Each structure stands twice: as structure tokens, then as C-alpha cells.
Length: 124
Picture 1 (cartoon, one colour):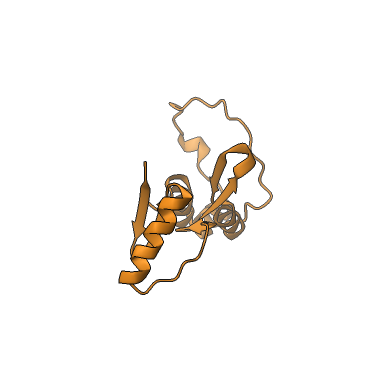
Picture 2 (cartoon, rainbow, N blue to C red):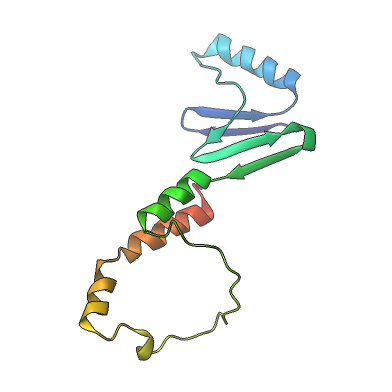
């Protein structure tokens, strides 16, 4: 079974070596193209093949690091959260002092949420 991914002028072909070679030759005869070899990144995703383990690992580590640095979260550590998803925030959870309110206003929440959502769903 062949898998072919196309995005603007990028083409990713996944199949047997023979099929991929034949397809490249057909495309080279018809179009001007550059063969970049095996895929290592695509649309900001980094792709690692571990042939001996028959594994393909796809990640966005560079983008995640960039986002964490941008929002001052580079030193954060993952933890499991057992918080109830139905928890409701109250007025007492909001900033109380003028200094706390100013700190809140300075932080780019919309940009942070958008960046983390993009990281979560990827470039679809």
C-alpha cells in the first residue's frame, strides 16, 4: 500500500524502495524536481526512523522548546495532574493586588494558548 503526502510543492512517498525509485524517475522525467532523500522533517515535525526497531518517531521538540522559552517556562517539569476537570475558578482565584493584576496583564495569554494548541494539534 502506497502513502503519498502532498503539501504545496513538497511530496512525501512511503512505499517499497522499488516503487519509490520508479515513482521518482517518472516524476523527474515530467517535472523539475530535487530529491532530498529520506525525510527528516516535514511541516515543522521532526521524523526519526529507527529501522532496526521498525519504528518511526515523529515529534516537535524544537518547536516545543521554542514555545517554552518564549513564555518563560523553560524550567518547567511535567507532572501528573489529578485535578478535577469540572473545577470552577472563583473570584478568590483571581489576582487581588494591583501588582498581581499588572503581572497578569503583561503576560501574553492568547499567544501562549495559541502556541500550545498548535503544538498539541500540529500543522493540520
